[in-house]
Amino acid sequence: MFEIYRRRGNFSLSTLPFLFLQASVLLVFTTHFSWTGLLLCMSCYFIRMFAITGFYHRYFSHRTYAMGRPMQFLAALLGATATQKGALWWAAHHRMHHKASDTEADPHNSHEGFWHAHWMWFLYEASAVTEFDRIPELACYPELRLLDRLCYLPPFLMGLGLFAVGGWHWLVWGYCVSTFLLSNGTYTINSLMHYWGRQRFYTGDESRNHWLLALLTLGEGWHNNHHRYQASTRNGFFWYEIDPTYYLLKLMSFVGLVHDLKPVPDKIMEEARLNRYLWREAKNEGAVFLPSQLGVRDLLVQMPFSAQGFVAENLRRVRGDMRGLGRLLAERGDELGADVRALSGLIAERGQQLGEDIRALAEHEQKGELLLDLQGWGEQVSEHGRRLRGEVEAVGEQVAERGRRLRGEVEALGGQVAERGQALRREVETLSKEASATAGQLAEEMAALREQVTETIGHLREETEVLGGQLAKRGRRLREETEELRDEVGVTARQLMLEFEALNRQVAERGQRLRGEVEAWSGLLPHMA
Image (tube, rainbow, N blue to C red; front, side, top):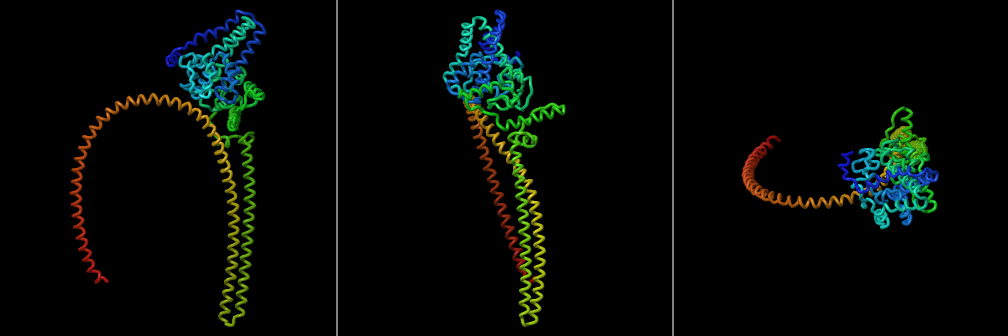
């Protein structure tokens, strides 16, 4: 804990008010119990819990749906009564949490301990500032920036209103007790939901799902689902994963208060169904299910065909198309065989007619030798015709066999092509979604990079001055080395010239010697002939 304190820095000025707020739950002993007070406490708890989960989290932090500007201000105002600072501060830190979940850059990294992740993280001075560059689309509204600066005014007015209506009893039960329960219920998502529960998806962090915390936090307990796909309005992906916040937002969309609620994509739902199936299989075998990173190919290969969903329906459609293609190829093969057989019969008929014509011509000739020659030639043509017919029939059978083989190969290749096409299409869709999410992250990283570049330019300017002096010294040294190298090159060039002249003399001598040998051989050539 002290190591974290040294790394994070000092506590902020909000530490004492927060501790007093947590201790204010003890004021319940200064008043009496009543069912009215308990009902008021539960009402203030669930109304403000919805404001945190439905407005602060799913709208301001993740923009999973849309609303008008007046409704946006009312949502931020209601969320501020939960005493968890302004919507801009809340959203900026939550986006940082998702960007670097359970790493050192995560504001409430669960690896640094339960209490740090639960509530100590926002008491440090480093967490007190609202980083507007992480929420540029929200920081442009002056009314939201005003609420962010005056974040303690709405809860103060709420407490004052409760005291004016019901006195001390209403103030204690309606604000102190309900705020204590509300704050710690919200903080369990940062702390307990990274220690307790089950992981359905591989997300690279410690996020988990648990039905009990989902009930207490109006659907935020499906935390691993949310970390797998943050852009969906609903956190409970299946019908049995109760998500009251989503139900209320859906009702609000019917009356026009909010709109454009974003669903869970088909690919994510197929991944959820496959992981659910693998978890049940592992449970039946007595093994432990550990989620892994799945791709479209895993869905196509591992998902049972009986599963209902986008990939299963496409698999059935592709298999039907391939069976139809197989029947079509069989019909085409039969037609090709019939055509070849008809062609072989036609060739046989033409061969017989040619033989008869030649024999008729031989009968009308006067010379016996020509008659015998033509008759023999006619018999040869007939024999060749019969042989040609046999060869054509054999070729026809080979073509039919090749057609059947080709049909089988096309069916197998069609299955592979269909699987690869489906995989590529789904991968492109997944890549486009990931590219959209990456674009937002890149915008944030570019802002941070801009600051780093500014600092780096200052450092580079200093280093450049130092490097300039070093380069000047190095330049003088290089000039001296260049002069020395020039002298060495001159000496080497002169040596090369001398060697080149000697080589030319050797070539001339060798040429004269070869010329004499050629003349000697030329004198011998006539005698050899």
